[in-house]
Amino acid sequence: MNYKFDIILNKVNKFYLQLKEIRVKKGLNQEHLAAELSKRTGTSFTRNQISQYETGKNQPRLELLPVFMDILDVSAEALLGLPEHESKDDIVQLDITESTGIRRKDVNSLSKPELKQTLTDVYDLADKLIEENMRLKDIVLRIHKSIK
Image (cartoon, helix red, strand yellow):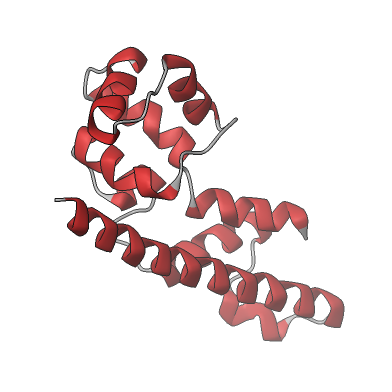
């Protein structure tokens, strides 16, 4: 079950993958991004910290997300790797179907009870993760509005 959990979590939060891609597209280097973060937050950031964020070795504090959004001029969805046009159910469905080959509506037709229960648990876990992400998105938007 940990493997499936990791797949879903990576789909929900791809910040560490997106940060570098977006930074490069915007023509910024790690030093410049660190300097902008330092300037806007009053806290010292280094190129090494940015590198750790981009490799997933470390994650920034939640309150930095709106600052990254502002510097890079992108949405929270873009930074987290969430398609802005897809619903949470589309994301969950696609991820689980890709990893198992079974759609949610087909779970009840499975003949093995333990497989049926495991997939039901995976879908339930995915729903909880997406719900948490939606709450996180609301929090980030409130923080972003309060900073401006």
